[in-house]
Length: 282
Image (cartoon, rainbow, N blue to C red; front, side, top):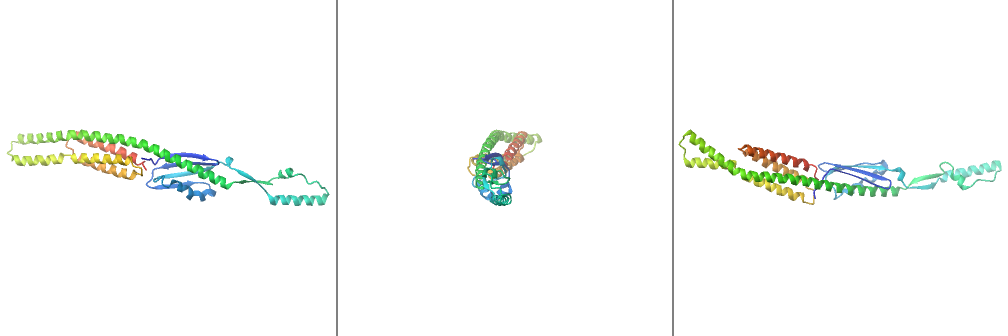
């Protein structure tokens, strides 16, 4: 399946909110923007991409929604002991025996501490990241399908151009032969028929682009095969674009008619359009 390297995904779970952005890159390059107290999770998070993403520069940004953080109340025991000792001292100094109730004591500033539940936050971060990676991969696949459709349309353009050149090439060769015969007649020269025939054969060979057309179609078939492959194919497709362009250049150099030259230019334009799209493919 063709996958794009350009995608965006956002996912949240509990207190964790992830945003993942993926762009073109020769290799897989994953970077994290996370709070310092969560950096220990990076190796575990990066492993989520294994066997799922092979190329692309991916920026992973984590935001912690503090309002969603689970907390637990913890008694500030040192402060309780200090307050109790202070009350005992007040009683001994004043003779007042009433110490007050526990509820009143809990109203004392900092007597109860709110402590983040670290394990729950870790689970939120990992769960949200897993969802974000899944969404990113899904978007890369959707984008890849659209890219494959665009490339397929251009492959059909190449086939149409090749079919037209197959029809025109014999006519061009015939026209060149007639042109050469006409020049010989106009010059009124004595020409060895065998030598003239030999020259005509050489001319026909120079003008014949059958091999180039056959190779163009072979490369088109190989591009289609790679578009259907399950593994990453971006680099192979890029190589095939170079091969297609080489054949188009050869075709252009052999062209002896303006129509052939224009069609060779059209081929180069289509190939360049495909190459630009393929830069986005994993």
